[in-house]
Image 1 (cartoon, rainbow, N blue to C red):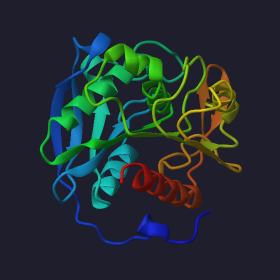
Image 2 (image 1 turned 90 degrees about the vertical axis):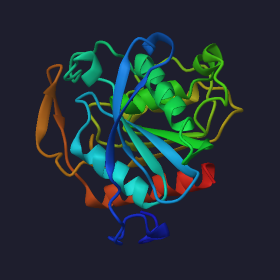
Image 3 (image 1 turned 180 degrees about the vertical axis):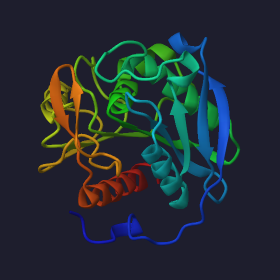
Image 4 (image 1 turned 90 degrees about the horizontal axis):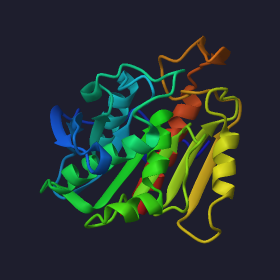
Amino acid sequence: MLAACLLAAWCGEPNAAAAAEPVSFPGVGPSASVTLTGTFYQAAGTRTPAVVLLHTCSGVQPHLYAWAEWFAGKGYSALVVDSFGPRRVTSLCGHPGAPTPTDRAFDALGALGWLRSRPDVDPARIGAIGWSHGGGTAVAVDASALLASMHLAGGGFRAVAALYPVCQRLRVDALAAPLLLLMGEADAWTPPQFCTELLASLPPRGPVVTSYTYPGATHEFDNKRAHGSIQVNGRTVPLAYSAQDDADAHERVLAFFAAQLR
């Protein structure tokens, strides 16, 4: 674990709660016909850096809002994107379908464009972070080929982070921005090995990739509501919250974005 209370990332310091603002915006590319919804947390200050948050296969859950509020308290405006509600999808857990992580990458780019239109956000300092299915989305949106196909003014995200991402069946030729991966060693749902294989297939030269695997950690190790187990495609998947790993993940994420969005 990183040094205790590094950068005051998870030390219980009081932060003024950011107001949650419901917003809507269009996707881009294949998602252009979808009016997406989200929740925006504005950080104090002007021209702040910002982060787009991408949810799991079960949609937007409470711990994502907790992350967003925490980001705002640390000086990063945060936009939680709901990819499922506008499409009338409730869950993709255990039964893959649409939207796929690649489909949702265009939702993330729509969120990027929306943030860049705001005068209170620095358009050059925007990152993305995702969890599980949304983690796969975060990796997909960092693919240089996908971004090149969009010809985005200002390019893609400046930095990308993913917690226990779905790396199976992702097609990534090369990365466009630095990537941080945080995974659980005992994750039986999205095993780290698939991400490790994906990283090994990338060109040796490119943006910096940082990965860390928490010993003994399961899927959703940062979710305080994670406990027991669930059945996924006939397999028993254990879920266990780890306060230590959660704190460490917050520290690593904060240090990563502080370095990349400075």
